Structure formats: C-alpha cells, structure tokens
Length: 179
Image 1 (cartoon, rainbow, N blue to C red):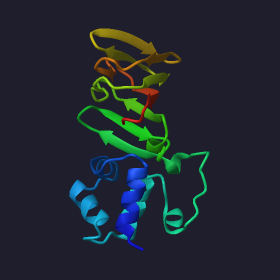
Image 2 (tube, one colour):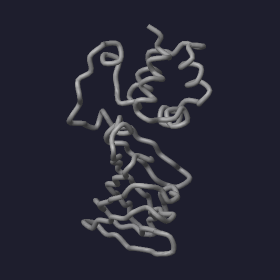
Image 3 (tube, rainbow, N blue to C red):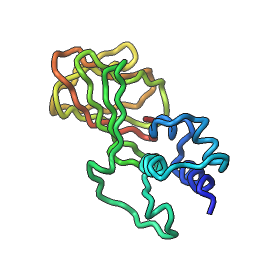
Image 4 (cartoon, rainbow, N blue to C red):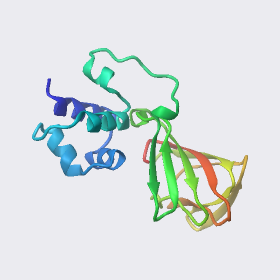
C-alpha cells in the first residue's frame, strides 16, 4: 500500500487543497506534497494528525470498509487559533469538505475578527451563542447579539468583528465549504 497515494485520494475526495491540508495539520505544503508522492515517510503521530484533518483515523485509513460517522464530539473537532486576528476557529465536523455545508464554531476575543471573505456562491448562516459582534456585509453593518441569527447570500465582501469587551462565540455554517 502506498500511503501517500491514499492520503492524496482522501484529500481530493474531501475537496481540499494541499495548502488547506497543510494549514489544518500545521505542516508545510511541501511536506504534504512529498508525502503524497511517496518521496518521504510520515511518522505515525503526524499521520494521525493528517487523518484527523481529513475526517479519518488509522483504523479506517488502513481498512477497506468505512462506516459513516453521524455524531461528532469534542475529540473529532479541529481547532486553529489566529493570534493576529484574535479568533479561534473550531471545525466541529472534520470531514465536512465533502458535504454541501461546513459548520464551525468561531470565538472572537474582544477586538477580534474573522478573516475577510470575498463574495462567493452559496449561503451563510450564523447564530450568536455568546456575547455580540458586528457582521460587516459590504458597506453595511449589522449588530448580532446572543440568541440572534444571521443569514445572507455572500455577494459582497464580509467578516465578523467583536468590538465589545467580552468574548463572542458564533456557530457559523457556510455552503459550499470555504473555511
């Protein structure tokens, strides 16, 4: 079995680029490329990390049959922190790139914001779980408080910003997956 080829098939199946896989697994794109071409070996610990980012695990990766996972817990999620933009992104469904929507939990520290996203096809939905934030949609601004939701077609540049003094947390769902 060529592990690199199988990783590449799984990455492509999940509609993920080498750059996305590298970022989510905290590796370099060059390393991912070399592994996929079987030019270098990968440690078990690193393979476990890569497989988690691809929504898989060692047992499923080395077996021929895969059982569909329906319920996901804290151990299934993947967390990425951006200290510059003062936010944390938690992918709650690790292999959602192969589906039509991608849910994340976004935590914005005071003064934090999400990356600015360009217009794209699809839809976006969010629900404020804690605190409040401002949704920037083109030139328009919308204040969203705990218990409130937003929904829009992403036809303009958009991002979320927390100008408050408390942490804000939002469940954000995007179609098609873009995070």
